Length: 421
Image (tube, rainbow, N blue to C red; front, side):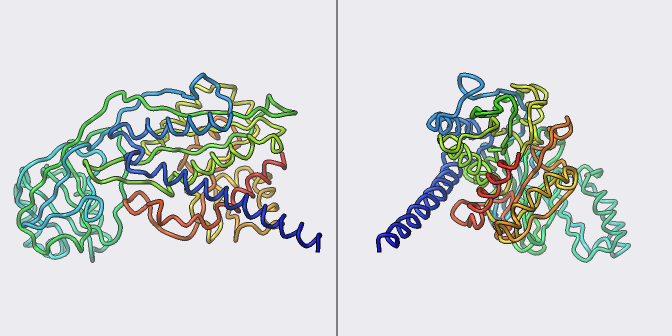
């Protein structure tokens, strides 16, 4: 009976530890997606608030800093939309982020405009097409819908998107999903994407009130910390993730960025919490880098590789985590085919422990913060989870709907993989 009680207590203790880990992960994601973080972008200093939060978490864990405040500062040019964001078609008000998005490089635009259409009924009719070509588009809005186009017509459509006819605004009607981004530049004209189902059929007039603010040499930052290795302190395993997201589109619409990449940021903090405990002290030094401005074009990681705080040659391996909130279909490992030995080791660990459904290999890609490291000769993986919700770069990537299906198993796989070095 005593043995049974001890076994039950051990099981309870293990489950309690696991539950606490996932609770902490969830709390971190909730905090990073809170309205006070403003989407971790460049409106209202959202990125700075997130960086301050991360620094405080590392300090509480006793993670060491390369600098007194964990910060590595850099500058970025970025286009923002801190104020008005209004679109009205024939009296129907459209909702930012839900019905429409503005191109990240858009300038301000304000006024009421006539609508000119470029769609199947126009491009498939020589007379209407001739009329479209002759019509002066200056001071007007061209609404483009490629539904039903053949290959040649689509090529014309793609060329027309460049606005050689100098319309004030180009609007593209999108059949399914709106996907936003960040730009370091401002275009000479505005482009909007509007869900086709939200756009009034044969609308005549459109009223736009969109205000941009271009920030030149905006100060952002990477956040860094480390836990010194017990036997090989001069060689390091680096875990990285970007903490920034898209911020705000207008004064009210927030892009929370739960999966992209509050989830990966939370994974790094969980790893920091794990390795900061004396019983888990690693052989190699473990470095944690939280990159800023990834969404603006890998700016933070590029800056770091050009200004490393310790020699890049000391990095044994880098593991970059982005989109860690699902996992029903396993994970994909970018650079897996580049670093075959390490990939096979990772896959062997997963096959033995049965953590994830699959560990899928992928080649080289410049799609996250691992890229500039591997370009400079640092062995690096970029790992992301697959399956589950499809929210990405939209207002629906929220903490309350992020399942964290395989978060714990991915954590276990990563810590087991580090033990193989």
